[in-house]
Image 1 (cartoon, rainbow, N blue to C red):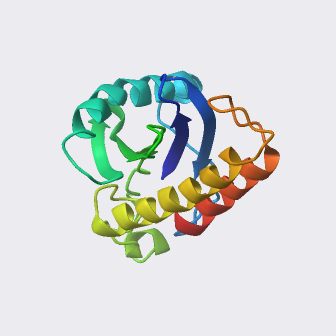
Image 2: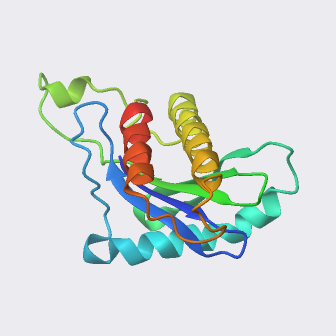
Length: 172
């Protein structure tokens, strides 16, 4: 599965962006989006289009974790969201890898269709994404409490990027 993670400020500006692939089920950690060369811009477009749905849903539930809130059918992408108390939105665009069509007896045929890389709406996937978002939220709180960080400015810390990447490897 390929992932595009972004933290969006209350003024709808991206503060942190990260693109990565799955490390589970034999994944190599490299994102392979179906959009080709335009994937960076299409990912931003899909996530920012989902902000309208987030703004509607966030007032209907007391939960910070909103689960899968939107999908983009042409690429089978799904958008999950976690909202901080400061109205910072943690959004994850996840696009499953296509199911391999291989001959019987190969290793690819033994991977179930409900495993994390192939089913973005399964309970296991939602739980893994929730755990990832919770860990990144804790990292965000620590980074935003740094006296050298100016509120609502881009996060450029290589340590923060490294820890978010490690959380992605751990949970996704």
